[in-house]
Amino acid sequence: MSTKIEDGYIPCTSKVPSYGTTWPQDRKSPPLSAGQPDRERYLNIDPARYTSTEEVRRERDLLWPKVWMIAGLAVDLPSVGSWLRYDVGGESFVVVRSDTDEFSAFYNVCQHRGNRIVAGEFGKQPAFVCTYHSWTYDLRGKIKRITDRKFFDERALCGKLDAPKVRCEVWAGIIFICMDESAPPLAEYLGELPELLAAYHLEKLFIVRDVKVELDCNWKVVMDAFSEAYHIHMTHPQVLPLVDEQKVQLDFFKGGHGRIITALGMPSSRVARSESLNPGLEFLLRDSGIDPETFTGSACDVRRACQLAKRERDNVFGLDYSEFSDNQLTDSWVIDIFPNTQCTLHPEGALVQRFLPHRSDPGKCVFHVSVLIPKMKEGRRPPFYMGVGPEVDISGTTRPRTQHVRFDDPKLKDLIGELLWQDVANMIQCQQGMESRGFKAIRLSEQEQIIQHRFCELDRYLNPGIARSIQENQ
Image (cartoon, rainbow, N blue to C red; front, side, top):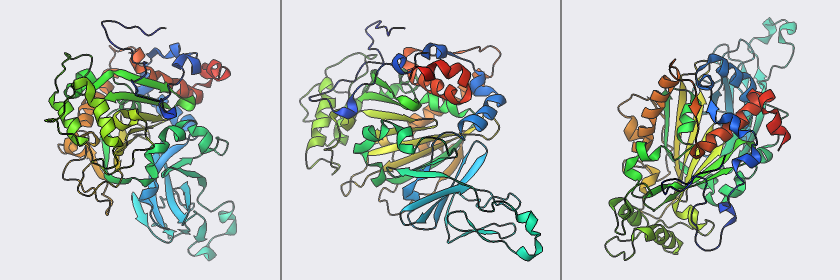
């Protein structure tokens, strides 16, 4: 199927406009059809992929045990003995800094009666003591003490008594785990992503906001909402004066990973064109250190002016932008890390979003949103598109507590920002509609190819018979 240009609209698969030399991280990937020759199977998606308990079971048995998943961030484990808990697909894991330069991960289950070894989200301790009968494990999950061992028949203690380990690797300050010993190494799994993301130095960022939202919808509904710019004109009309959501570059990488680059600093093609500045573009100029009152360019010059301002040694944020391409200086880069993570990236920070399935209910999930920023010039706050209000502590001296809310909590808008809050309303209604007898298929457009790409990869795990021809062509 070819991409069409109708009514003057720019195809979503076009390359975003660049200035000067093209940087390697900007390069366009081959089209989806090159890597996924059977992609047309996924022009229509059965709603049962989002609504059936059978799909939850297949994901639990065939997907989550086979993939590398982001369990947490190294910044949350600053010293030996620091740990976090990661839950997915009915499983729970303890991830711990087991030595100065070592991280370990193991199943969060005591080998006595199956009690959870830890119940909280974070902590620090020299060893793990089960709260039920005090069996004790070291920082690598090895059994250290069986209380009153003399009362056990040794036959009851046959087999391995350590908490079973899972693979654990760290890249750019992000902790990945994998249950499958036969899965490829993390570097191979990530493919092209490390090169694309190198300039952001994610390992140097610190968390300034952390929110977990309980949603009454499937985890894929939430992830899909951030996998296309098609919805912006209707859901986020307030950003059209400064975001050209039709000048979007879609990239498709091996392993189901993807990228969406959206041009920021250019009015949308959907709105009336004007040479004069609008309030949104003025806001963007101020955030880049340019006074709109003295700016002599037109609306179409704003994006380039912001890029040049950031190239200045004494730029307003006090950041080193030398490793970033011009596009990265202004545009929104959304990176899909298969299967359930997205990172929205700017040089001034990262929005890390994880979409965590419910253990049994296809109509529930947890949407985990973390905002990370680098150290900036004294007195300078992140730009408005990072969604960090004046009440947020950006010093980095204290890790903010993780806040738990439901989608209908009145505090949600303040916690995650207006744009994400607007998206949440769509998610709940989509799930309800997908469960209707009157809805037979999700119908995906060229602007939603990242979703097609993800389903192609999902079926490598969940429906290997359907995906066989795809595998043979890669």
